Image (cartoon, rainbow, N blue to C red):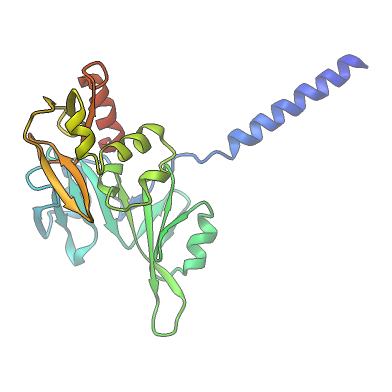
Length: 249
């Protein structure tokens, strides 16, 4: 009898563990007009043809943004020609698609875990996708407008997202790389997780003055990606791990 009870108890534990694991969000192969993060420029061109227009993006000289026929989609490439962000009004995944004909309710029912980051924006933690909704017409309910797939670095301008990445390294370095000028001035060394450059604290940092916050910019690449600390803390291997967390597709 005792062995039977032990067996029932163990089976219950196994069932509970299986339920927890099965309810964890799994990575979804999201695409916008067939384009996903990490694709090469050549792969995109094979699907969409040459871009209609291409120009420097918000990180001049490092990223470029290309638009395709009818303005759909808009793609941000790395210097190496890898897709780091794609925006458009057709979101696809293996089990379905979202189009401007779908209502906001349909978005919420399809992705109940989507959290609100702004009045008209929702996003899925760990999936690197933001949904936008917009009124379908005068006096009409809101509907799906567009979606954005992006590496974390290009979502930093959305203030609530870094706090919700469910990734301790991203949350920690998001906090330490913003409004950090005074801390950087007191640090033994400063390191940039964008270009992996380490400099003494006496280096001539660039400074962002925004909303009374002072954020240091890298003297080498100009990015707001500086972290301060000791020589033992700020190492090339540490900066590379942070770089990969923020910028790897």
